[in-house]
Length: 334
Image (cartoon, rainbow, N blue to C red):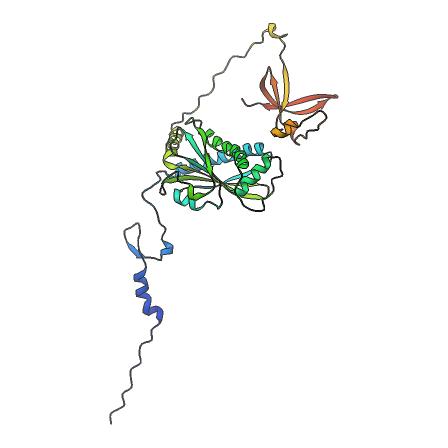
């Protein structure tokens, strides 16, 4: 008898094994530096625009970042004195990105001030978060600088006051380049809607300097965006100046000055003045006899000693044997 024929069992297949070749063929091909190709998920591929390369080596980028860290440090001190409040500033972003990408990161509403830096070409932008702008305006008006309840557009008066603080930011940035170029920032206006910002082509490369700023409870970012093609010559000048910097020569010994006796009786006026107190125009107009003006707690350490009308020393205010006295602590900067 013939043995019954049984059907041969089918090979077990899994859905993954069946569709794996089709899935692999659907992935885009990515080419590696050695020339070989490999299919990879789209999420692992980072787009890059080769039409706008940035010609800076790692050493130049590091030098520029350190340069802007010094700028942020000095800017924090300037704004603290101007707003009469502690302003914490840290360099949080130093990148190049396209103009279109910069606009996409703006808040709604936004506050972007436009500046022209002479003699550079292009328009520079200073983006200040509206919440941070409201706090800065409140400090300028003598308020406590509390966190605003809602984010809103700034009024015309607030914009005018905030523009004064933003001019300090732009002017301070120009000042850090004083060794390689004489720059001057000119305000061109502001914009609160990113849809109307068209100062450059979408693919224009910008150098974006982000400054994490904290005033009281508010911590937001101030971003300075500059056309890269305009500021690139400054970077190369700074690099060239650093590379060709000569070793400073030892100062020649100067002969000791000799005192002339005929000058001994010449009278010279010596005065001491204290800085750090600022009043608004309205507060000044309302001053009257008998009013009491509160001085800052550290006013006695902000004293400048003038000799013949020229600032010579800094010092602390105090008393000695029942009389007012000044203790000299250092030399004044000219």
